[in-house]
Length: 382
Image (tube, rainbow, N blue to C red; front, side, top):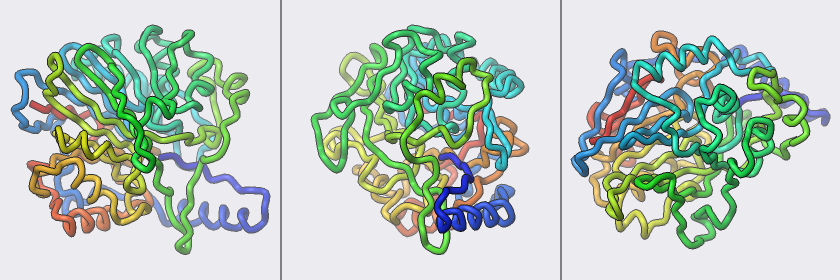
């Protein structure tokens, strides 16, 4: 998810853009977290939460760092999803990696005993800035080492071109990606000896609607030369609007002992139009998901099948009320997502509406099976 209020050249689009800017800036302020609304299980102060699966003697630790940024730890190995920790005011059009935010980020990793040098691979869901703009700083500071493979859409290579080593970036081509609308052979990518990842073609919800018209920002063709010239150092400023979305992916991740799957996680950091984003049904029937990480932001701007239908597919053998879900990308990332006290709900998303969809589908949020953690929380699966 990302925002950029820019006015197009055509008069009617200029009027729409101006309307959007006025509405968003005057009425769509971030809200204080309502403890009695959905979800009712926001972690108020603790930085630990545990799901009891009892599938393996080894546990998984997932550190949630805001938006779609997850660090998943298993057997002394990490995989990183959507690295982002620098925040910027809503009205500012220029972005940069914030060194103060970086120090907070490193302190939090140290507190949670996370060493990024143990990272075996990085996975980018799409190329909006709030899903990858701090990866260059992690590369520049050698927190993500030069031999670590990075996977994402084709635009990612252009954005990161000044920070990559040769052959470090791996575009997720059609051959490497499962498409739910045009089923293709399933091909897991081995992230390590014990972790395998299936990339799945997904899409990105509109950011909001004006008079019923869906507004989808930061789409279009990426300008590779812009990043080649303007993004040489991680602290260089870039325009928010240049971070085009590109193709979007969700991920099915298996954690294995030899060929046995100990745990299976599903990661979707952008709400999508079902069935896009959904893993192969036959794969799910053979081995359902243990825990799903789903995006809350913009969830009311996709078809009402989201998220109920995909949850039914992910947990085919479970009663709906027992589906284990971690709701991510819920906080207002224009503020300070790494500070518990300042976490607020992202603007322009109807959380009551999301809760209504879930309850209607039988997925009633409760404190055991669903959680919406504050950034900095470790979700343990064991």
